[in-house]
Amino acid sequence: MLMLRKLFRRADSSPPSTPSRVEPTTEPAAQVRPVAPSVDQGIPAATVASLLSAHADLLARMKLCYGADKDAFEKDLLLPISRLASYVNVLPATADNYFCETGGLFRMALEVSFYALQGTDAHIVSGRATISTRRQLEPRWRLATFFAGLCGELHRTLSQLIVTDEHGTEWPAYLGPLTEWLASRQSERFFVRWMPKAPETRELGLFALPHVVVADTMQYLSMGNGTVVPQLLASISGIPVYREQNVLMELVKRATALVIDRNLIANANRYGRPILGAHIERYLIDAMRRLVVSHPGWLPNAERSRVWLGKEGLFIVWPNATTEVRKILEEDELPGIPQSPQTILEILIAAGVAVPQTDQCSLWSIGPPPNKNPIEAIKIAAPEILLPGHGDYKPLPEALVVQQTVAPTGGRETPPQKTAQAQPQLPLAGNADAGTEERSPRGPNVHVTDDGEILDRTQHASAAVDRGNDGPGNVVAPEGPAAAVRSDREATIHEPTLRLAAPMRLAPKVREVLAAAIDTMNGEAKLATAVTVPTGVFVPLEHFKKAGVEVPVALRSLGELEMVLADKSGKPQTLQHDLAGREVHGVVLKPRFVDGLDPSLFRPA
View 1: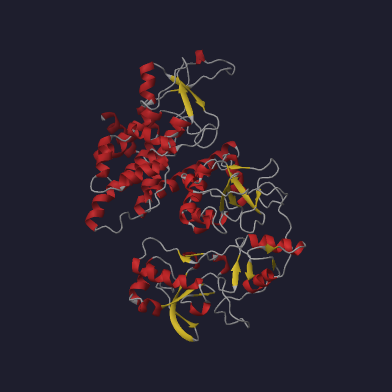
View 2: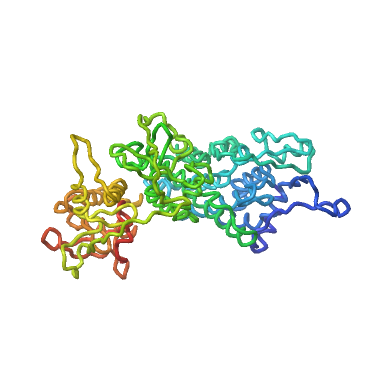
């Protein structure tokens, strides 16, 4: 402890410098061979003191961010950091990608925990609790977030690499730190062997957690609550908590993506192009798992579902499914997330999550019931990846894969040329310059496809009339090229339900009333309470009055979260709009707060 105090006296007296790395110690000149050795020379081990000294600049910034005195910082943060340094020593984080240098795993853990700790300053946890309760829980939440970032990558030591000494004896990573094991073996260097195609099993990090965070600290985190420790363990193991929002996990995910993205950019500038999507697959899988349990369009084997489970395996409709996946990742504000469906597919294939049909064709042609029109999909390597309890879902008895050649639209292939059709110009509701009937981007007469294409429902219905019925439930498909285009379009039709996507901090009563107004837009247009306008969704103020919510309270709640259009002073702007033949006052809800709306179809405020 005295050595740590001296270290921080030097760190406090000097300004933070650029991050430094622990470089391998060099041997005496007499022992260095004049030519490159033909065998692995191993990695020289480092002491805990040298590791802490090499990262003194980051530790000094961490101390300022924690906002406690020196004794509290050393007890709460520095001791777990020292245990982590003893456990991982100078192990690299990856074999040939991000933080692959000597000491990369320790440096990555420090940076992730630092940025996660910084993120706690902008979030309020346990927001519905009393002030006195939050005052007691806030230090525990901040400390748990720091530990989640510090120990989030410990699973690598147990699943992705094998460490041996000079005699080939393996390090028992479950039993104790690497530094202590090397000292007991009297070894000054160690050797790392990476396991080929090792899966990412983040759950194993829970077994390494006691070597960094002791039982007394876990007991302190659990005092007065029952959520801090479960959310900490959920973040380390990578298991999402669906019944409540895990702010801790979101902060660590965002910090990890930021740190890895910055390291990859730095490596690309110095050493060349980094490996594609080496850290993105975890976020893609997590987003798809959340959609399966929460999104009605992702219920396996449901009508017009994105997910189909059959005897041949698990399939996801592609590229239509990327719309919801990108939306979740954008809400998480994760940097480095690709936008192209082709890039996402390449990442999933490279990670072994998706299985291509052939070397030249990545997509599969499936015919889900009831119409069995061929649509394109990707095949997941194992149903357990997205359906942990896949035994609860009954596979389709009939075959899904269509044994015919269908021109793919994603992967490494060239998309087919679609038949050019003139699309009608659809003016937005409330546009005074429009000389035709007012229609909204999501009105009852308008359909927006998953590709962002706007179709008139009346024209779509007239195309469906061309089909003939051959008995009850039997649809006879039309013939000819035009019919094939219509069948393909009908197979990809998806009508998402409009619903409110408000932040969690919105007042519950205001959220309930606003959600009810948005829900009326899914029925008949003449009965809708809210309507679309060129800049968003118009909600009348009288709707809040009828529901027993005072208008000033509703405006203040919506204005604080910047959910409605505001004037130059920043206050919510009230406008007049013609609704059911009469002028009413209301506010304009921004389109990004309504699921099912495409913000690109609206004018900026």
